[in-house]
Image (cartoon, rainbow, N blue to C red; front, side, top):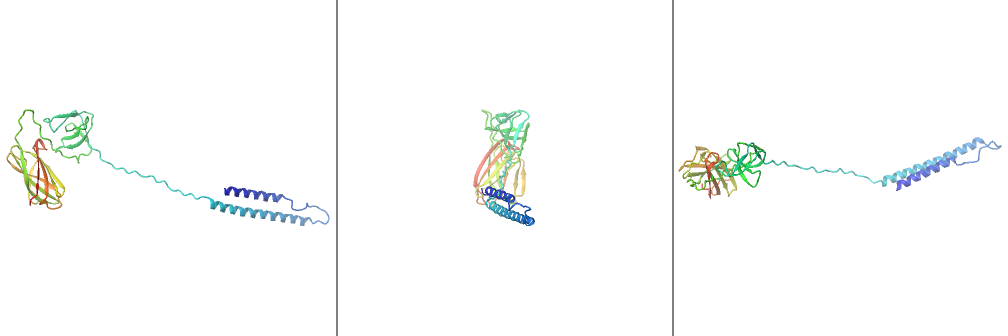
Length: 303
């Protein structure tokens, strides 16, 4: 490499310069006749000084050229900082879970009238996927067999996690004992009118009971034209006027009686002429309990 060669050259010049200082520069001094001792000494000193200066000059020139060569041929290093990607984590809320303090049956519906599909043992944990109207029954995936979804009584249950987004599920019809007569009871319902409230539209339907007394309902309406759905779950049958202002209320729908069921939808425009699908579940006890029946209706909103 260039810098090694240059260093060797500098060393050689230094050796030469030092040698030059030791070389004989003239005849030995003596006290012979006709010889001027002072002049001879001055001559030798002048020669030594001249030789030393020349050597120093050569060393300085060589050192300067060597440094220039090193500066020209020395590679430049650029340091680029290493960037480490930062991971982004999104917290996903965990599903609500339930445990029990006493072994509890898990049934096909709320109450002992429904068949037991399994049970939840003390120390087991199961996922909660729904609740009833009063949150005293939890719909869970059975811990021992998550394929089975069943209703767990909340008396001995402890639920952890956020339950605010759990759907409210209407109970299935109460099973009848084998060989027992089917109770006579049904209802009909039809579109009545709609009203306009602050930021929503109230859609009103008339429900008529044919035999049983109904104490609660779950009503859902889907406006298929505008693609908007709304609904209501209630223990009261409340009537409204064209401004969605309450005009009357009844705690039950008796046999032969007619009561109003209502759903609120945030519709974009007037529903007149829109197609809709409506589903009404009536139950004989508060909180969508007891005997429940469900009917659906497809029609067009009229003025």
